[in-house]
Amino acid sequence: MSRTVFPILYAQDLAAMVRFYRDPLGMRETYRFPPDGEPTFLALRWGDGQLGLGTYDPMPGLEGRPLLRRWRAADASGASTSTMRMPWSAVAA
Image (tube, rainbow, N blue to C red; front, side, top):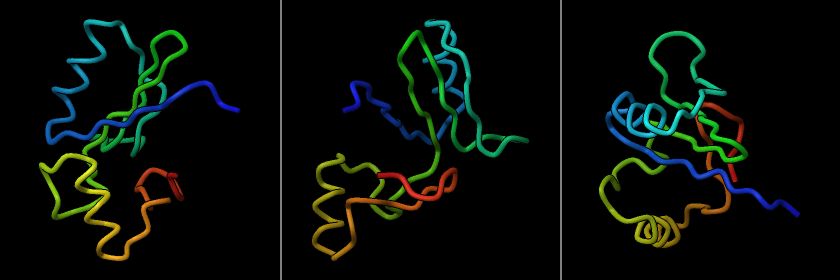
């Protein structure tokens, strides 16, 4: 059983979000996608904890709604809420 979490936060301005989390806390970058150029996803580590930061919205068209409302909208449309294709990995649960 896993005892860690890996939250992923999305924002329109990834660079500002990276500065907000990485610089004051001394987090270090452990993963970047794509590897070259402007990233759309970064993983940061601080001690044993990790944080994902991305610009990709897994449910386009629902920007600005709280997560619970996004899940309900996906459920109502018949979309699967158990897994979603992400640009930086095959499938995220």
